[in-house]
Image 1 (tube, rainbow, N blue to C red):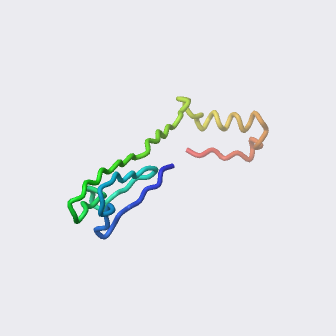
Image 2 (tube, one colour; image 1 turned 90 degrees about the vertical axis):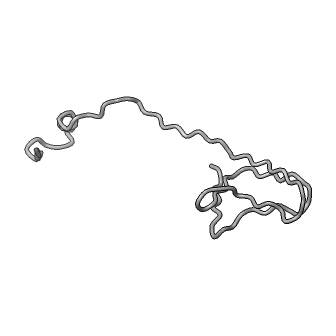
Image 3 (spheres, rainbow, N blue to C red; image 1 turned 135 degrees about the horizontal axis):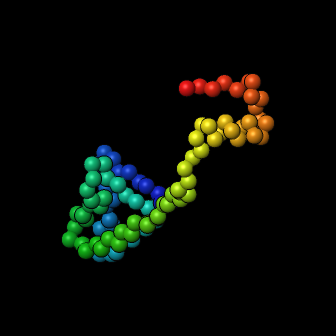
Length: 92
């Protein structure tokens, strides 16, 4: 599961004041209200930002099975002897 970092109160990532490549991996940076997570340098430096957001696919498997009806559940309870018929209350 990737780490989500929320930058609030106008906070942003400010790169080092030097020519370099800043690599940001393994998490997701989010700025309150949207927008860029990174500030420019104050000086005339070239900073390349290699920002790789992790990709994670989350799947939910369903069997496509129709759930049993109330009557089918009641029949199964009676068949297995889990409840005596004279103690069974039917609701409509």
